[in-house]
Image (cartoon, rainbow, N blue to C red; front, side, top):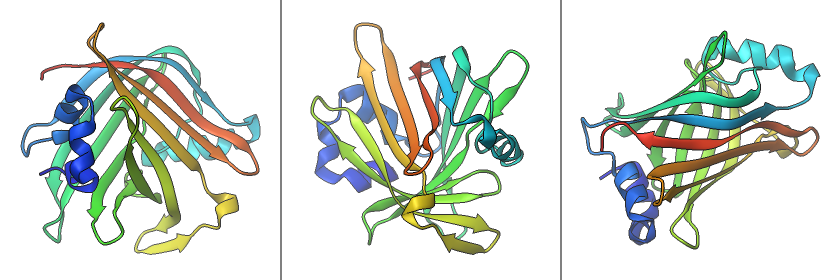
Length: 203
């Protein structure tokens, strides 16, 4: 059973059937898809050095644009303590640069959240809450967050957090998944946003 099926419980069956298939992630069978981001945008220009630094960890990036080719690979792994993990590799092919937004997720069943470690090696941690919305869409919202320095994790006050909102759904008429990721901060406003569509390579 995938960590997403476990975290959603009975709600998993209310997802659109193709979303159920996408998030089932049987062991040894990665989900791979390609598509196009209609738009990718970020925060104010003074944040550019921080976003550029983030590229070293395959975390955030400063490039923005429209109609950016995109690839996603979700792979199930077994962690050092035997826990199930899902590696997320998200690749954005800009005209002159290939950028990544990678993460490693696992389950915290006691808290009913998915643990999301962003970057390689991990630079940022966020608890994620998974919700099935009306119409069978999947919605993801962030909870507690920490800055990661090796084995040290520093809790972030709400004012310094990136508030994450994600919505993903399936458009049957065109056989594509639609995704919208929106990250904001209480002081700065928009930090990072991308919106687009992708189609499974093999399903």
